[in-house]
Image (cartoon, rainbow, N blue to C red; front, side):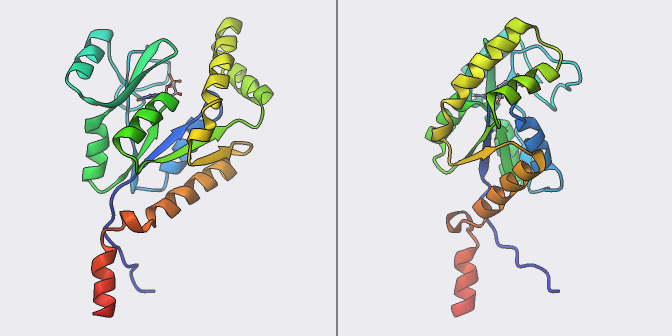
Length: 210
Ligand code: 5GP
């Protein structure tokens, strides 16, 4: 078979939001695996590092002063308070991927998504819902790390996050991780084919028709 025709295209910003516990990280991991045309934007956060996390890989873990400086330096595309901590998308992270011709996956909450939409109306917004609130609670408890109070707080925040589902372009129900990741991939592939992002099409068609 002949080599595929590769046309130049603009990188896209693919936003994945969900309440904590809906399986978003698994979907993100599956989306990134086996696709070298998309990379994760590693956010900065003031929350403490959790066991198993790696600084610079899961987040850039910074203290309050460092976060303040990043805000003052206008280093963020967006930032927000989540669970009483601050989280922000670094312009440098996003530009690094776009400049190397890759799409960017952003795991951010509804507040960040709203801000980003103002900066770049062309973003792709995907919301992941749990199959039920009972299942969400089961998954949150399954982590085994949080007290009842913390779980109750997370359930409340989950309901608040879910209330923003209609602000998204696509909504997935995560009743099965493989199926959900497959759909997330299908969205990515379709969005990559959008005419307005395929800057190489004009020349290609000119070459076709003379
Ligand atoms: P966690 O602390 O469990 O890793 O993340 C808590 C929440 O913060 C998640 O819903 C995640 O999507 C959100 N979050 C992570 N990074 C960012 C960011 O850079 N900006 C915004 N607005 N939210 C973020």
